Image 1 (cartoon, rainbow, N blue to C red):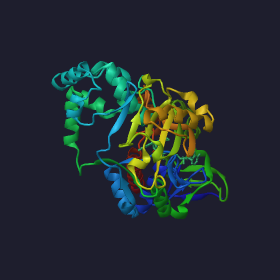
Image 2: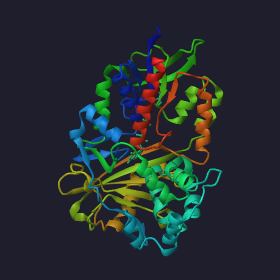
Image 3: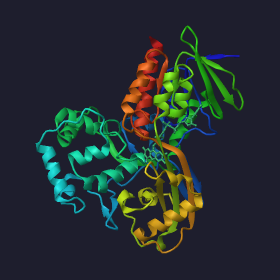
Image 4: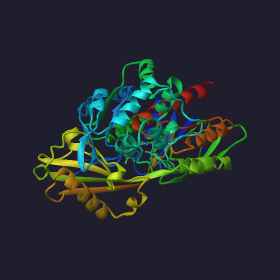
Length: 455
Ligand SMILES: Cc1cc2nc3c(=O)[nH]c(=O)nc-3n(C[C@H](O)[C@H](O)[C@H](O)COP(=O)(O)OP(=O)(O)OC[C@H]3O[C@@H](n4cnc5c(N)ncnc54)[C@H](O)[C@@H]3O)c2cc1C
């Protein structure tokens, strides 16, 4: 028998969890359907042999929305912050070199040559406009700054955020603030300063953070609040719309899989699932969503005795330019950032391999990936012996790519949605892939749904 629910959220990753929680907090009896055995999506933490591992995001930026949520959920006392001045390194000329994080450090850094520094001065005092067609991140950096900046800093940063290819990522979609800065001020530096000044509310704390017992604390706290209104191991397999605008939703899974009907349907699922389900309402939904590329990523966690490491691991970790010829994209020094990540006298290092510039990496066996990461990182950190612990998690569809044409694809979907009132989209392919961006989008969607239902 079909049961009616006021709002239904599909997908219990962080986007869906926050959306369902926010709706319920507003007094709307929203329900959530999650396909897998556990909520959280790519956020997964677990402890083995005294190591606390993060299989997805290692940490996240402390945004205002996240802080408020943690307060509401009663988990603020469990937040742990990384040292705010922890240096980040980049592998250049075979050595790990500190990334300049402040303007004075940038101008004095040996990583950046005179031509790039001059280009920066030209940006500060000059005026340029972004070209009309969508521009790749690589073209943007070459046009405004230099090939060296692209290779040494921007490329590695792009690997760290998107596991993506700067030649294919759209600057307008992947880094909208840069695009807007140039468009509104004719200069990236002036535009970014103007943006920072115009930001309302308390200054955001960019420090990276997690929870004492791992990122999953966030998932558990949200799940507890949502309670029995969330069902796991149940998948949404079909949707249709009645003439009166109500949606019928077909489910498949363990336990209660009776169909549901609703007036408000929120998709917090990856683009392939969203495209497939929306495609059942109108075939034109599927192409723009199904063509969003995803990076595959292997997350390789290795544990060592500290006495076997010849490096102080005094910082966040390091990123590797593609020109360095390694397959490792970067490594986070978890146990240097947060306590309780490794047993006493040990260190936990998490490396990322793959991304869109090396799709074959995700096809390697876990043992091969662990060996590869040890082989490539051991010389950089003067590691004297084999890891005493390893864990490999492969995500075949880890991160959506905001590639050239992304904005057009999303605009096409938005236009189609105008004919389907009652449908909203949340998720990491819309306003940024970070946990903070997903949370902000989910809160906004919940507010729009609330207003939609009230009107
Ligand atoms: C390896 C890795 C490292 C990362 N590192 C960072 C980091 O350091 N900092 C940071 O801020 N962000 C990081 N991110 C990005 C961030 O973690 C993700 O973008 C974010 O968690 C995605 O959340 P989501 O809810 O939008 O999607 P997902 O987590 O993908 O959740 C989607 C959910 O939908 C469910 N679902 C799918 N189909 C159906 C269906 N038919 N019916 C019901 N449910 C369905 C899935 O099971 C899943 O639970 C990282 C991501 C990865 C993969």
